[in-house]
Length: 261
Image (cartoon, rainbow, N blue to C red; front, side, top):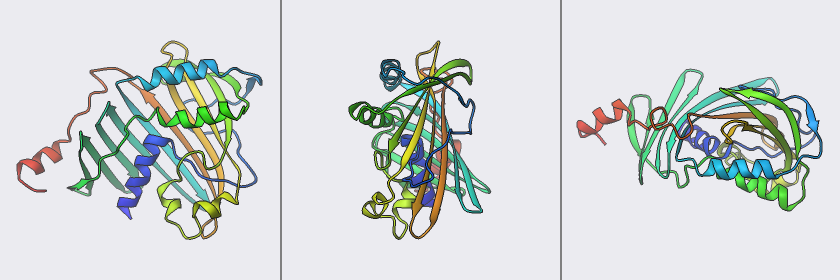
């Protein structure tokens, strides 16, 4: 269902997409702009990542691109989310999967979704700050004294980044929408398949912002089977008033001018 896919896509854009897991566990993430592969410090400190998160949360605008890969046996699905966000409540988001496209536009408490060529009223997203949703992960890891390791320095978009990796238990963030709707995917059932989600945070050496977040998990849903989920979210044009300005889609303007709701 397209509306369900949009809900998942918006969750990806704002949370980074999590899946609960089981054995065999997570491996280093292997998608996106930059990929760190080597541990250079197995006893890294949390302070640099926390400082980067605080700076990133205060960003007033940015563009993001999220690539999602989901594998279930021989079946493979991938899609991409492109978004431009201006805090606190202005956003334009596009979802591309195979041969269909979905768009979402929000201004204040008014939002529209486009399936095909028609825009329809939609529920606004309560919190559009993609960075704030990573705080739950980091706060949990610090509170539970989970280890953080530093990976090899990696180039992302337009600057070198210091990379930090942490592995957290499942259930720290909400389930993807499509998993929550699947039979046998209740939180109680999924909690019995306890496993891990790996996060890699890429912190710009020059900008100080979190420039990329990669995740990987291996999960089980009773009615679906084993799922391998990989995501990568890249942030760019952060606080660039010219390049990260949200524009209302031309097709939406035309439809509203014609009085079509």
